[in-house]
Length: 68
Image (cartoon, rainbow, N blue to C red; front, side, top):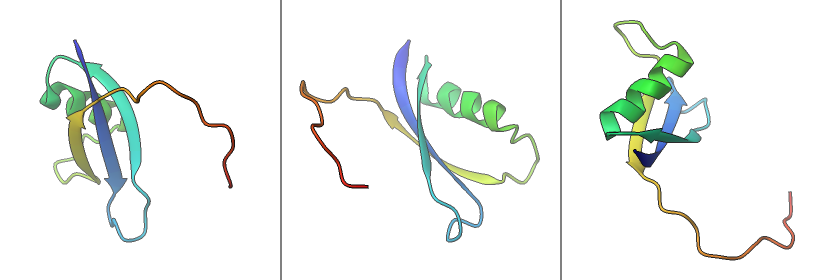
């Protein structure tokens, strides 16, 4: 099993923000299918756009402060 980052955006994409999730799956298509199932995107015309890439862990360290 490998880890993938799946980024999905609800269509129309100019009104919705992208959301990224880390998925553990055997292949990229399996990762996309897991996210589609989680979102209940079963229609013949999809309601989301999907992008999949391999997950690479960040280097050692931590965030000491952040502006929100």
